[in-house]
Image 1 (cartoon, rainbow, N blue to C red):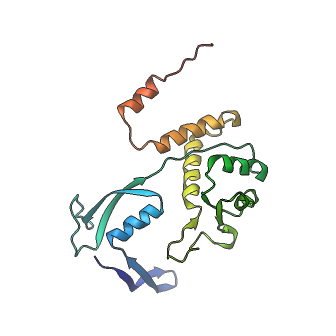
Image 2 (spheres, rainbow, N blue to C red; image 1 turned 90 degrees about the vertical axis):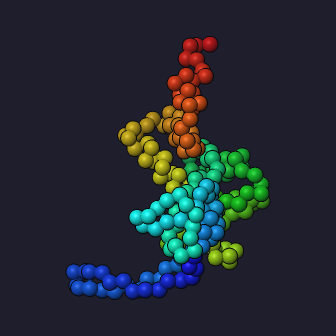
Length: 205
């Protein structure tokens, strides 16, 4: 497996004529890819060899330049609907939902400004300065980012869009459905049975 930096020039057409672009790429060994997936909170299930037009579930050959990684999200999420985004509301919720040994990565919102005073680790990225991820410990991996949660909020927004607006009174229920669907790794007979025959009654008690 080739490891190292790739440097080449690519030409492309514009309305002003052809232009060239210097491309700096990098190839990865399978073990490096597994590490990167774990940093992004994915659990790698399979690493297979192959190339464009010739994919298959087979072992990796040393002369292959492309591999296929099958991975899934490793942990479940827990979402909470808060009444407002103020520090007096957000901080008690964070303290209730996290251990003291937790390290939080957030944006620069003022609601998180006093998190470090609780003994929890806290680092931020400043999107207004075009900062999206940062490497604080110098290991070459930009561990400080909000990309995972922003991706989840995008998923929630896309889930809510077809409803064309929901009443805030019932927002918690919609969020709970999204959370359940997100955490569901595969559809099983038990899952379908729970939907068709829920374990509760609609009759008044």
